[in-house]
Image (cartoon, rainbow, N blue to C red; front, side):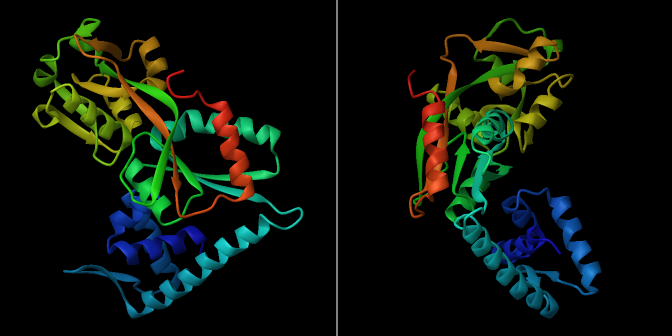
Length: 299
């Protein structure tokens, strides 16, 4: 039984839901359910059961849950000690929302590791809301996200910027610039609430006097990459980060557009830190690298 499975049990108990626990553990709901079934087969017992009040642990499940809490706490203490002993590994626990976490952040980590081989970085990627909630619970040393999800415990600093572009299925035959009224006539593929891209798009539309609730939303997707893969042949438009569309625009599978009379949608990519958690020495060094490596605001 792995520590990730123990964490799944802890999150199921905390949220009372397998789907919410899956999101907190950065798993799909089917993957979380499959892990739960595997555990029940491994121990030949029912671990949880559905009730009108949500998912609750059985008597056997509570025994496993108590063990899970001990193991996860001991693992955290062990990793902390390993980061302090001579020859030990300096661990950095980093969360990232889907776009920076699958594009810029891996490149930055590879660059940093080449000059700092003694530092080990554990990266978890998920929706912005899930990453910030995990940061509140001190699961990460810091996070890099695409929108400022409110939290009294979390402070944000801009690292760089990213442009979100209106894109379309080429079969629509739209021109380089699209009239704003067209947004109400065309089906739109959107990132679901809780994602950084979705939050940025909805906020920007409101700033332009466009009610996002009036859009003909043809589908909500968990991550921008899913929107990108669905857009060709869909007869729809979508808002997508420039960092992930370059190849698809170049090969003609999608088109990108301006919106007549409206400014570009530029969003900040943010460093998120839990203000209640002091940074360890190896974390401070990495944060200083980020500060020097990333473009300053308005550069």
